[in-house]
Length: 150
Image (cartoon, rainbow, N blue to C red; front, side, top):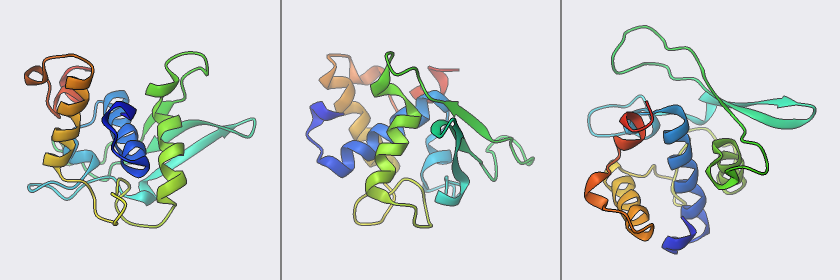
């Protein structure tokens, strides 16, 4: 994300959003509110598990699931080893993002002015990131996190 010159808040936001989407195989509608759904992650649905006073696991509770009426089990995303893939670690990304967002209630993923990013904004940032990496942006969209990782 630093290649995109988004500004500090947006860099932390979209890094957290992308790493969580990828590591958890999330649909965008499970992370941010969209036109057809309101079951996005709220701040109170996110917690951490500490081991030896160090945050090791990000826990996300979804209240509903697109394909089921059952409440899904919590999703546990484990911190990556410090020497491997640190920039892609969802735990590190969320810790960094929370340093600017704080722990106020509401949607977990918020832009600096307090509104969640839209699906279109997220898609645009993803396309710009793919292009910055020299890849074909037509081969990627917001669903790539889910189907590409599953």
